[in-house]
Image (cartoon, rainbow, N blue to C red; front, side, top):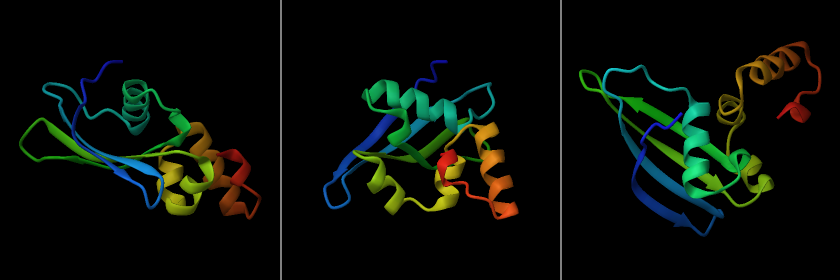
Length: 115
């Protein structure tokens, strides 16, 4: 699925070893794509690993078809796990895995191996 994401700002944050992107998408006549679609598109555009790409936020603007957001692309998984909170990391995995993580966490079972 090609979304046509336009990158507005790209900044390399050397302190935390990540690339920070601000994006914009004009989504006229369509619904808001889910995070996984955004993640796949950006990973393909930047030729980076999809597992190191995190969608921090997505904003839809009332009364317009404009969508904007912030994406972090990390260089390694350990840095990603250190800087990104649990709830953001869980939002960036597919629905079945997300449900399994929440279910295991609720039951008190180990869940970190799931994502």
